[in-house]
Image 1 (cartoon, rainbow, N blue to C red):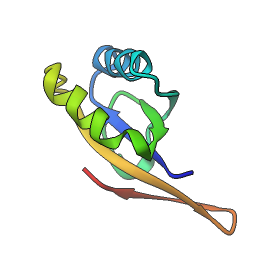
Image 2: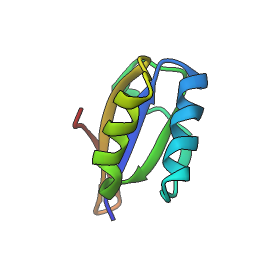
Image 3: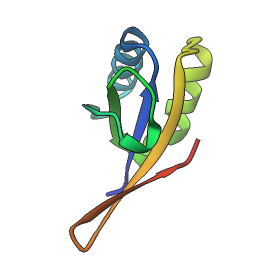
Image 4: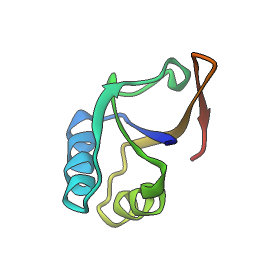
Amino acid sequence: MTKLIAVFKSKTQLFIFIRLLKSNGAFVETVATPKDAKIGCGLSAKFDQGYFNLAVKLINQNGLDTFYQMYKVTKKDGRTSTYRVL
C-alpha cells in the first residue's frame, strides 16, 4: 500500500494533525522527516494514500498553517523513494 508523509514546521500542529486523522479512522505513524524536505520539526505523520483528500481537508479546516509539504513514499526492489505531492 502506498503511504504519504505530511511534514510540519511545528510539532504541536503535527500532533494535532495526527489526532485529527486518527479520530477519522486513519492509522497514522510518527516518523522521521524525509531528508528531501530539508525543513520541519524533525518528525512527520505517515499514513495511507487513501486518506489524502481527508488530510488536505483537515489541514485547511483546522488552520494548520505550519504544514510544509506532503510526500508519497514508494518502495521498489528494496529501495525507498519519496516524491513531493503537495
